[in-house]
Length: 255
Image (cartoon, rainbow, N blue to C red; front, side, top):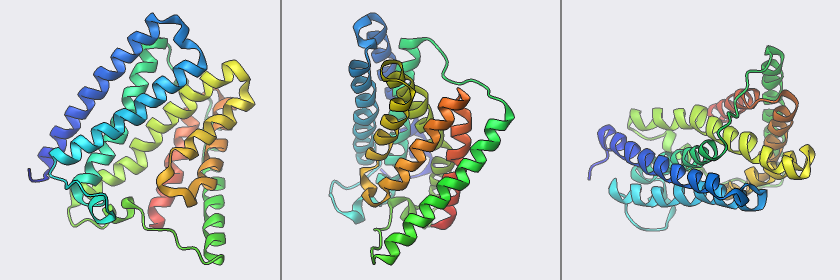
């Protein structure tokens, strides 16, 4: 199959359908099984759904879009793999969020006052500053991070792939990650262990799941802490989303 905007749209529709149905099924199980509302049961179930579903959809999508099955850097940054990975990551998170919404029945989006959005902008400056300082420290130590697949994708000759990557980095990833980590995971852990533990544990999980960039775990952990603090103080994920969008936009401009 030749990778075109049409085939990518078809893959997106298929992944969204699978993710939505899987999330619906898991949400109904969580609602029916009352014991699943315990943090140590619901956490692995929903988190595993996001990771497993995204990974499975990514591999299947890459194959259907014409990607070769070879575990080497050149293959993993080829067009079918990049497109499938972005779609699958987004779909996996959405599937997990559907499960949470169906099981809980409550909204995790509350409109805060404007001062919290202003603080979200200030927080983005702090996270960008930390990331720059970390990069300078790595450079001073003589360590040059490997090029990310995102950076390679931004040099793709096809404009629609570049546009899709930008949309994912600037909007898709910030929205779904904030809803999943700060909106759901932090609240889940905080109910059992308190707000401070909830902020720290979700930040650790957020950083740990970016295993493709081990060198970036410290700034990612810092971003998770700042976003978690915003979520705790404001009672909303919207300032966190604003902060995440600005942070990712700055990172994109630096590539």
